[in-house]
Image (cartoon, rainbow over all chains, first blue to last red; front, side, top):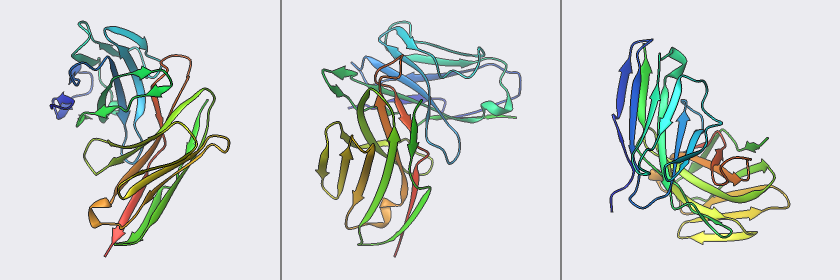
Length: 117
Length: 113
């Protein structure tokens, strides 16, 4: 079946521009995560949705970052007034969530590579 | 807070066995995951451990000791295509989402002929 897809794959923005990154999770997955990955580092958690509810946004680096998932499926990560330090790969992941003591694995999309010039 | 440590780089020979270690400190542990990530690609799921012991899946095995906060990923019969970054990630009760993952920095494995 179809995996997680993200668009665009590459985005170049001038400093100060707003960007919107899209994530299409695997159908039926209730959990959706956004991560930021710098070169040579592991992904860092940004925010988490369970269906349409944003339950954790503790990883968002500033109030310029905003995420939504209005219908519990597609999600958008928006970055306002981009800065050079926002340059990174933004990964989206989805999963079935949890069941009892089991935490289901997350499936990652290919990421959006954002470069702020 | 949480602390996940794994070696930055490792080198191994084609056909050999390599063990990648991961140590972590966390409370409310919910499970440990290993992911493989080739350069420029998305992480792909390899294994999940929530109970102590060894989980085997083909050429890859993963071990967990919760009391020691320790896991390893064992790769057998190494192939050139196994050259990638291997990410250790812990799921725990972090006070918000109960199934978000905290990743280590990854171990870059280079397989040489």
